[in-house]
Image (cartoon, rainbow, N blue to C red; front, side, top):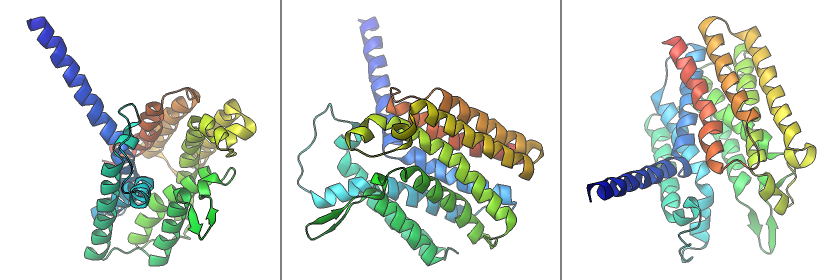
Amino acid sequence: MKQYRSIAGGTDFYTLLERVAGGLLYSHLFISFCAYSLTVETYLLAEVPVSLPIAAFVFMATLFTYNLSSVQSVLRHPQQSAPRQSAPWSQRNKKLLAGVGLVSIAAAAILYFSYNLKINGWFLLHLALISIGYTVPIRYKAKVVKPLRSVPLLKVFLIAYVWAAVTVLIPLMDAGIQLWETEALWLFLRRFLFILALALLFDIRDYTYDRTTNTLTFPGWVGVQNTRLLSLGLLLLYVLLLLNTESGLVLAALIGSAVGAAMVISLSSEKKPRIYYAVLADGAMLLHAGLVYLAMT
């Protein structure tokens, strides 16, 4: 009997652990924390005081953006029937994710106005338009314009640009650094290349789905193996830029993060489970920020 209870208790524990992990990953809390960490990293690399309100704003804005599709779905179909238990976590918890999305955009707005954040409104607007247009189709009368992610080969560049703009340009703007200064441009380009290398992994992950929707992506164009090689080539270019712009422990930390990302890329395939990309590909960004933090503190 004691053995049975132990086994049952263990099963309950792992079920709870799975639910908690699923909640962190598929509610996009984890990837939002990655954005928060990269924002803090930018302040450290620029050697200026960290603004926690800006970092929190980035966290909330990212959380809203990644839950935007759930917000749109629930608002369009509020009476939709509950999905089966076998459905993916995000489908079974769509209303919860929509609530998280609405709360997060409200929190972002409160942070923006309460702390009078030094972010150009037009700059934020263009990022918002890209982020919304990425997932939400535009409907006008009987016509539907497909979301930007459906444009052939475009989505990885949009992801890399928005992430680099949010996690590099926003904190630099807040710190009063001119965005056209050489150091700022190099930092933006480095971040863009690093995120672009990782974004190609999600093209590999979605290869089968994108084929069914006739969306042309890099794996569909040049093949999965060549996409991996392209991703590794971008990381190599990233490292070459590092060698010309950083030194000491910071250089070692950033190269270490590139090596970690290269390992994740080398092992990627369209057959890997989604959690591989949710934990390791996104986690490469967290490793990137964490190693810099350790090198500079």
